[in-house]
Amino acid sequence: MKTAFQYEVISRIKKLREEKNYTQASIAKLLEISPGQLGNIESIKQEHKFTLAQILKICDELNISIESIFVIHIEAIL
Image (cartoon, rainbow, N blue to C red):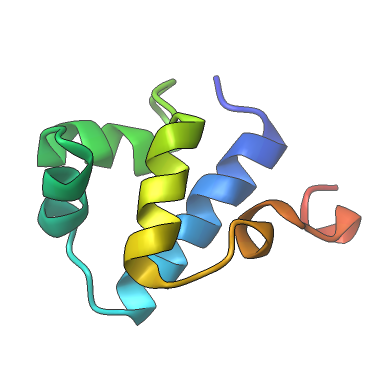
């Protein structure tokens, strides 16, 4: 099971991915994983998570800072 913090980080990445019009398939290709695996990562029901290396690749591709992913106001996870 994902922690609230892990799910918040994954949700932020998903939201940014969608805002920048990237599909699950395009990000999966970047990370060299299957679209199904990315779907599992983005699902609250699955235990799969991003690695830090994967998050860094996504940040580079989306042109966002890693801080924007990890700096979360405490209210967001309570």
